[in-house]
Length: 141
Image (cartoon, rainbow, N blue to C red; front, top):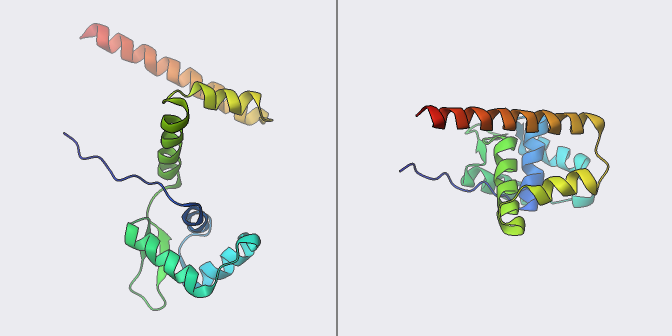
């Protein structure tokens, strides 16, 4: 049986720091602190707090920390993996695993951009195609 990978769920503060690393790329503590202050002015944190949080992300395997002085921090996981893990958790906890309530909320209860709607349609068409192919493969076996 395949070993299950660890959950990629992050706290709100960890998501903010990872967002910084995903958008800006590798950076030193000083660069990260400045960028955080600029990008999240309402969430100001001290320099040592920033260092602690970055080190914790590295210790958890979400970020890497170079041995250089000053250390350079970089994202060690992809944004899409974290998004998928968080969304799977939300689906399980709030809708019993059903995607319909989530999609219904997205398309009915908020303004959706035409390009986002087009992308959703493309994804549905691809899912239908994949489902058809899977059914054909099962019938052939």
